[in-house]
Image (tube, rainbow, N blue to C red; front, side, top):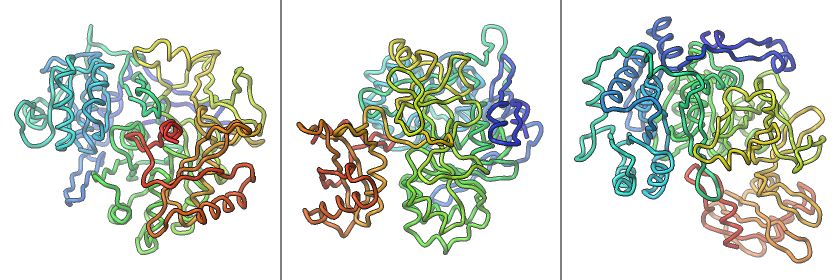
Length: 549
């Protein structure tokens, strides 16, 4: 497989793999030329992308076709005056043109900024001004078009806006623009030559407090996804991988582009607007999906359907990331499909850095162990390594050099970069426990830890127990001030249809938690709400809940 050109490793055991793993690349490595174009030569007719949508549209693109379309996109951007280092924002849902655009930007040496269609006009204005965006390419989505048009008067750096789909006054036609371009694009030289260490990508992180941060990655970032795709997703030639993610999130890079093609695997895209479990099950069956990755919430919704009625015999491997996986969801999925869910952990700032690889024993509720390429510890507030059983911050050791896939900096924010890159560590802001076998157990964001009567309580454990109750659809656990205990556990709960909040149900939920975990962790305060406040990526805004209550 192509990825083997870029790594050296002994995969005979986890210990050997972790110790010997090394990524190597030429100083001018560029994914567009060195991966996509290489595949267009060695396996031109192999399937690269299979696109579908609820309307029944289906498009298949080979590696040769994908390479040529990326060249057209690069020529298109160059013709507009986009050059090396310029920032281009893609607000494109799951349109197949996203792959053309992102690869064209890569070949040109510009910086791609993926963004979600859920952004408001103020969100877009902030991002354009913070990053100095020069061009926006937008999906043909009425709300997104409206948001972009309303953001433009306050976004002076944006020179071009292009639209995928029907023509619209004031917008460039992206499809028409590509159709008139040459499908050949030579590798830039001289002043336009790129180095592997040059900026390639910016993710706006979906912070739960304050403005989102800009995590800047270089051209080596895609190689960090070799572990993600080959050894966690188990992608291989002839396989068809389905990761559920909007292209605006880093999860799309994990499962819809970089690592999959390095493994010569095909990417499956289902371009839906609203998640529907039955539709996803039908796609898994219809297209013989071989590897699958989705957030735990979606697995939970899928297992509410008659999974046994679908033929999932082609499915070989399942993964989950984006939020902690509860034992209940794991057990239900295994009972219904026969497959275990391999959990992974990472951020917009990293590739997959913790996880359970095939062959590793799975411990229910654990995120697994550090993946090859990453040296990870738990550190206390003084930067000292935590002992098994102690809660500490998940930190990546960078004193001997940063792993491939770890971000370079928070763009244009030197102070924040220094805050998280210090003492030879990158501080993730997430906390966990580590056991005697080296497995990590997620606790929560550092700011979310509840300190009650001397106990440190992670919200995830209490939320997991609450979600096992048949009345609970969603739960967010936070700390509430208490004059005696310092803080007490508070649960904000969305109930399933057919249930109503009452004092009797509150007591039932409290007793439920007491019966399944340490008594001191039960929620002394419970609120019933219609919906939880969330970021555009679906993360619970715990700070907003704390302020509201």
